[in-house]
Length: 67
Image (cartoon, rainbow, N blue to C red):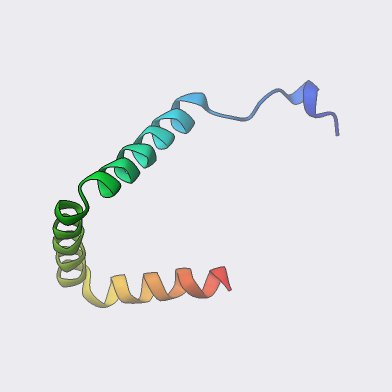
């Protein structure tokens, strides 16, 4: 299998957009710890009340797949 013949499979748009979002949220949570805590707590409360058992099973399945 010749890797150079196939070319790069990296989608630069998706990669850099994802990296920018991750960096933004990381910096936001480090600089504004109290505000980020309140926002993330309210997001978690909304997700758990809206999706309920589906969220619980999806999160559990994800954790089990990591093992």
